[in-house]
Length: 165
Image (cartoon, rainbow, N blue to C red):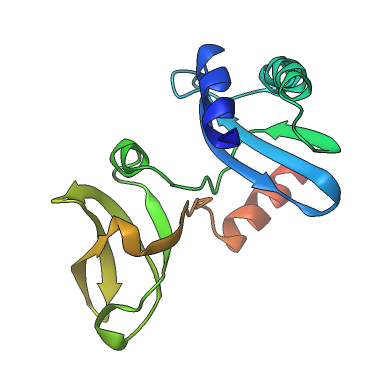
């Protein structure tokens, strides 16, 4: 039995996207879901709905686990499938490679430009210029969105001091 395939079919059947599945210590099974068409992503009710359905499925299929945790992928959402690299074009991402490019580095951060000829393309800063970096999808060990929260520390201090008046 292919657990990932089984979970994906069920999650998709409920109208969600299966983002990732993790087996953690002590029998914890983590399932990360998303709902792209929903503006604010998944909420607690979405997670509860999927959790109830998956609990039944896992019992019927005799899957050995102790606890099930269903949640959103978070702001630093993992990018796993080719479609993810198309969907999040323009976003800031962090990549960790299996094999360093040109024998240099394995970790990169840059603006996602999408897929070209089966390669993930990033715009990365190198010194004073921005370069394009193309990486084979198979060479990506880990990819995540790198959310930026836009304000500076001074901006936060100004908001706080403005509240006091």
